[in-house]
Length: 222
Figure (cartoon, rainbow, N blue to C red):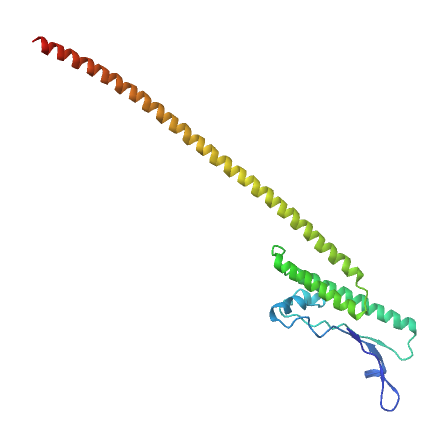
């Protein structure tokens, strides 16, 4: 971002623009970090007014144009300082609201999208810091806390998923073991019934053999 200041006209007098008043205008960086259409969405977050943030799509961001605070000729250094402070605080406030609206468009379930979001926010803050116009320390802390919170959440979620997966595996193994025991019990019952049937057949066979022997003896006597 750059600051426009008054300059001298060819006749040597200061040119203060329309109305004879100079003004301070904050202009956001014009050069994106990436020319790739895929990354342009992530690297150029929409910084917009509070009203426009609710209706403007992220894919079609509006340029952030801070309002002007004209400085009258002969303004004191105190008035100049107050005007700059107002511009700085308003820019930070509007930029942060726009960034929060932009974050809502992302799904935290996607690690890839979240990494791109983190990279984009880092690049945005770096660009603001590089211009050395506003103090972004108040923004860095919430952003860092936001990503730290997500990291902890993701770790807990992964741990919970691992525990649930382990529990499901144990439950499935126990179920398979119970099924095997049930089938084994059914097989034992079938084997016992076969043994009873075999014993009955052997008894009948012995009785038939005895009858056969008796008949053979009677035939021999005749």
